[in-house]
Image 1: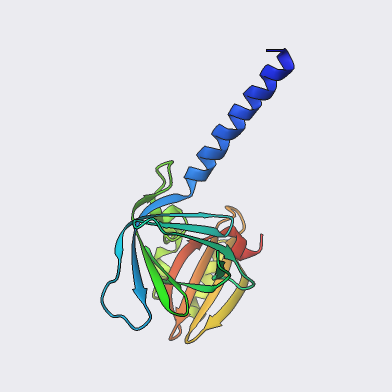
Image 2: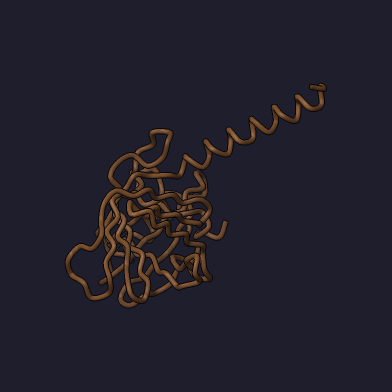
Length: 198
């Protein structure tokens, strides 16, 4: 093989290796529960794989179904592979809910998030350590505290009785989603940088 051919082959191998490492970096083990609209009991549930990269989400269910979501026009709004509207809500520090018109998938993270051993709290879906004490705080009072800790408001929306706001930490580049209901921060979780319009 000629020198240029060997160089091209080496670059191709390195590129594939780097891509597979970065693809794994945002993958988490989780438990997924699928429910049809109106059902109170658990539907099909079990282990699943969840990954998020630049606002695009993949949920691989144990029955072989794959859900691919792409960002829509508003934060936490997506379109699935068939073009259906999907809305994400956070129901707790380690839980996210994805709602369609007729069904929902509840994703509960079961351990470390990512292939590099980061804590779930340091990745998408977890509560950042520096903001855990603000969960449950009154929104008006905590607003100044967020700014004092280096976060700046980027965007927000309202869904029902809940307000969703996105804040960017100027020094770390971390984007967080805050859900406010009844005047208090119900949850603060790491979010995709896409949601902070970076």
